[in-house]
Length: 467
Image (cartoon, rainbow, N blue to C red; front, top):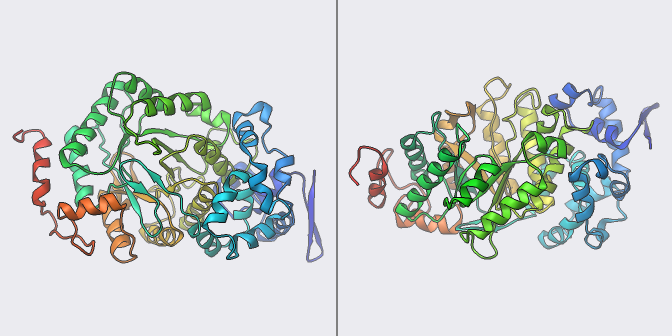
């Protein structure tokens, strides 16, 4: 079915729904690479006008990727709740944006609506939103999850302490993890991206993080971000696995490129719950996504990268995760060219995830060959805090020495806590005060390099120290 609109005497026609969504998408290099983008701002505006007049229910009648060829599309169709969709079923995409901005669309209303929304609907409305809209709407939609700490409470910001090491050195991981803890980072998770993906290294890393957690009595959870199939093997051998991690994408073919499908993810989720480490009613899965992953795998079906990203959230939502984050600038400038595109994409991803009911975090980051810098990341962090992001990722000095990209530093989290008034998870906040890392006002209480007395025992974990 074709879609058309007339703008200043020129007739613009879009041959199908995929083309309309792609042409309406704000400029980004990935869609240019795929040959899907608008020819310029006038065609983009025309597509956005046509999209604004499109009934939301169109997305229930027309699939972007056929269900009989793609298990993600099938999942989206099967999980759609028509009763939850009813309050907005008569709206166009443009009217839906106005509904979302209205005071009546409060936290309760957005929570009730989430099962009735499809990824394509939220991607479509995000294309009509300015940055301010993306922030304002997402800020109204808290999503709270729990393991040992409670993530996503309004007004709080959690952090992933990311102690990566180029050779997976136990000492290097521990030193980096302690560095983050001393800066108050780690209430969402202490999560290591392993340099290798072998079973012995996976088990060694989770045992190391478990020892650190128990020695310091830190109210957080840990994760080795190895492949989900390695995690399944490790759990079968009794490894102390808190969170099971996997990167996911928005099509069956793209997920196959990651070596997973819905059945494997379901097996992992069930195995993690069977360990009994996750409290009743809590969550134990951790997913990462990123705009451009489906395109890089040649698995995007002609769908724009931002809509494909939103479809990945349907996969994540199926498994009730503790954490989901988009690695927004990590895939590179081929997909998000500069700081402006990264900022826009980070806010879009957070917005779409929250509307679908996900506990969204963002890796505020860029690669060294992108046209972006630390000031762009400062802007995105500040906007995400205003939007109520659940967590961000921090590393020592903003420079990940294993993955070779730029993320946030632990100091950036201190800025968010002390300047923007975003304390950590309540359990972690109490622990920071108890061990005197922070004072009664939540400010860092120690001089640089000074180890609080309660953490001195942690140094004995390092090789060459007395047990």
